[in-house]
Image (tube, rainbow, N blue to C red; front, side):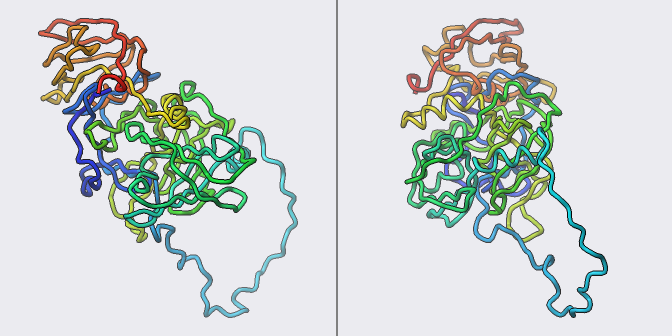
Length: 416
């Protein structure tokens, strides 16, 4: 889907502090443009939403949950016993009480953790830019693992991956496929068997306020469990772009479960333990952590990629195929005045589904199916949630007149 927004410099660092509030849970990322599908000059387009798409893309320093970097595990000094303390000052004044541990109640965070932890891995990355760590989700017993593209992308230029499992063992891994547009990747651990695959759930069934659990390796601290709720659905989040200017924008699950650098690629699960999202980015108030890690931490605004949207792409990567994406065949931008909403068409690709429907530069797209389009990012995120060949109802305004048409979405496999 060659749908772009303002192009983002490929391979460059995230926006400077104070410019882009969304960062990967590994490195700092910023919003970028998308390529010739829904919009190429301005923000990219999303897909159908189950609830209202947020009026704006999350736009401040966004931390991609990929890796925690060397030394990202934090300072422990303040928690250690004072070496000068005497034995008398440490003598307990209370007696020990024996307590029997009760089985975890079904539907509790404890029971979810017990079920999911064996299916979550820590991924250590060594590349040209140094070392970092992220998280991953076990898909098959023989070592197929789902993670974020930004967790492993530096390895493609030369480097290595090492995966650590819940039982304390580890193995080298290779990349099977990557997809910058959805920020997903599939890797394969070598020489392993009898792993515990995660249960894949349905993100379409989520509701705002529903309890969720996030699991991963924040700041390199493996097997970390945090809990919270679904704060919002279909939040358009833009965290960068590929080397062709296509933006990485997706209709995110927003959660207040603590997500930090290193959580990227790990699962967001419902209270049955089923994976409903891939923890990918966080919004931060500042780009520097007061605890010396050099990366900002969670302020209760974390974002996960909905599992429904990416599983077809994950299946393609696992098979060694090139991922495909739906597209309208336009480049879009934001309205010029604050009181306007919608995605403004900048360019239309000749012969595309948008061209055949009569869309032209200057038209303003306001709705896709039942999803309201507030800006370019929300359109890109909405279209990204569909697959090539899906039929969608698109509503737009042309010369003051509203029009609606049924469009069969193109594929970027054929429409460069």
